[in-house]
Image (cartoon, rainbow, N blue to C red; front, top):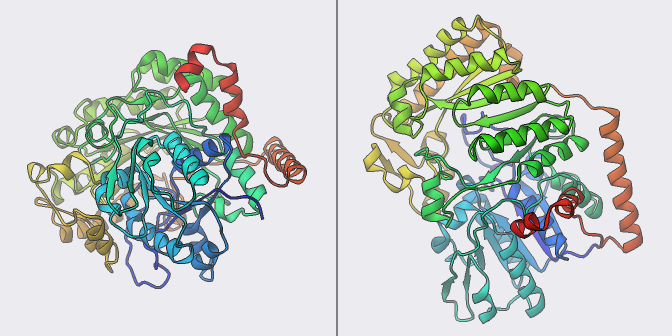
Length: 563
C-alpha cells in the first residue's frame, strides 16, 4: 500500500441522504453539484499539492460522490481501510455541517488515535463551537491554510498522532485541544498578501488517481465524467460587500483576518486555465471578478490568456458590467468567451440595498448589448429571491422583466436568465447574518448543531436558517415554484432553451469536444506517473509541474512575494 500521511475527506451535505425522505428543492440548481453538494472546494486540491510539494503524501477521497454513485458504497469500510497519520475534513460551505461531523465521528470510531483536522470558511467562523465536538481535534482557520497545515503535519508526524504539547502553540491559525482538554486558539496571523503559492491545476489530482488506483475518489461532481467542466479562481478575499455573502470584504476582514483581497499573478492565472485545457476538454469557468485589481491587471491577464491558445469555452464571473475596453480585449484575444453576472433584482433600489449599487439595470442592459456586439457566445444573468427589501411581488416582477429583456434583445439565444431562492442557508458571517434585524431578517440557527438539525428537515423550506420579514418562507416556496415555471415558459417562448434541457438541467452547459491532443496528454501524464510509481514504489509526489515551472521562471522579486 502506498504511503499515506494525510487523508482528505469530503462529506455530503447530509450523511444519511440515501436513507432519508427529503424534498431538497432547488437548492443546487445553479451549480454543477447535486442537492447533496458533492462538489469539493478547490482548497482540498491546493492543500494536497502543497503538502506533497513539501514531502508528505496525501489522498483525497470524495465520499459524497462515491455515496451518490453507489448505494452499496460503505464509508466506514473505506475509512477503516485507510491508515493515515491525519484525517482532514472540509467544512468550507455550511451546507456540509451535518455530513462532515458524521464522517469525523466515523473516522474517530475506526481510528481513535488519529487526529481529525477541520478547515474552511465555515469551520473558521464556528471554530469555538466546532472544537467542542469530541471527534474534532484541530481546526485550521482562514482562507489560506496550506502552510499552517504543513506545520501541523510536520509536528504530528514527528511527535506522534496524539501529541498535544506546546509546539502546537506556534502553528498560526490553529484551534486545538491541549493535553488537559483545554480549548486553545492561536492567533490568525497567516494571511498571505498574494495568491501565488497554491497550485491550481488538475494534474495533481490525476497523478493521485494513478498512485492510489482511485479514479472515483477524485471526481469533483456527479456529471464530471460526462461533462468535465473545470473552474479556477483569481483571488482569495473580495473587494465587494454583497450583504448575504459569507465571502464579502467585510466578512473576510471581520472573521477571517483578511484586510484586503489577495490576487494571483495575472500570468500565472492565465497559465492555470491553459494547463487545465491541456488535460480536460470541458469549459473553464473563472470564479471571482478579474476586474477587481484594476484595468492594468485585467489587460495583462486577458493578453496572457490569449497566448494560451485555449479553444474551449471560457466563462468569466463579473460582479458588475465592465468597461467597453474589456469587451474589446476579450474579442481581440479569445475565440469562445462568455459572461456571468448576478444582478439579484431588476429593481435598482433592491440591488443597492443588497450591496450592488455600483450599477443600474440600464447599465447592465447596455453591457449585454456590448458583449454581444463584441462576440460573446453567452451572457448568463442570475437573479435571487429572498434578498433584502424584496417581497413576493417584486421577485415575480423580476421574472416578468426577463420576458421584456428577451423581447428587447430579439430573443437572442446567447442570453440566458435564471432565478433561484436564497437557499439553503444565509451565509454565516455575512453582513446580514451578523445584523439580521437591521435588514429585516431573523435567524433560525446560530450554532453548528442548530444548523445540523435544520439539515435533517424533510422539506427545503424548513432547512432554511433565516426568515425574511417581507418574504416569509412559505411565500418563498410558493413564489419559487411560480417563478421557475414562468421563467421556463419565457425561455421556451424565446427559443433559447428546450424542454429536454430544462428536464435534464443541462441548459447551463456549454459545448465541448475531446481532441486527440487532450487524450494524448492524459495518456502521457498517466504513463509518466505510473513509470515513476513503479521505479520509486509509488512514492513520487503528485506536485504541479506547471506551478513549479512558473516559480522557476519568475524573477527573484516575484519568488520572494509568492513565498
